[in-house]
Image (cartoon, rainbow, N blue to C red; front, side):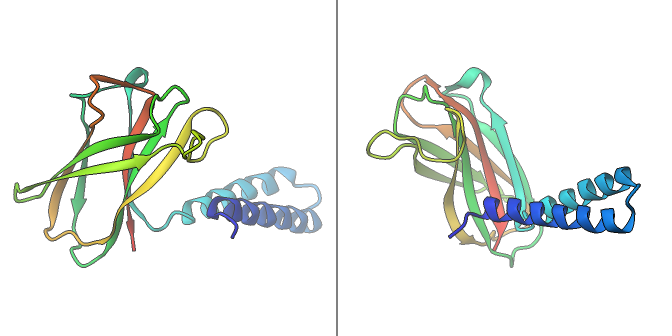
Length: 184
């Protein structure tokens, strides 16, 4: 199975190539128009490829040192309590990360003030020590499915607080943490 990003890239390239050819046949002297049209078309295709995303935000960890008291806080407004969402945790780690996994605490504050706490384990390397995730350099991006098909029971503002739970004061090698909600 071809990954989604590769399929999207191939589709964009095919569309661009076809558009260039058609425009060169119709308007052989108007190269600027064809380039502008290709850029607009490419942006539209790329934007439409992520139509399931409802919310996504990432926080950069300063200097790649995540203090145990530092929380990444995300405020999400939910207006539709009937829609189901897939809830993801985004992580970016460098090659200097000293462990093969990471534990996180996720605190959810509901609009009515109730609180839920979860502990999440995210594997960042396989049994041989090879980093998981995508990325060409030492920095790897991972997206972990935390909950599938979740419905939010109340309309209003939800606050999600993510903190590292690795029992060290300063955890090196994590450069970004985030959350993503996709409509199912």
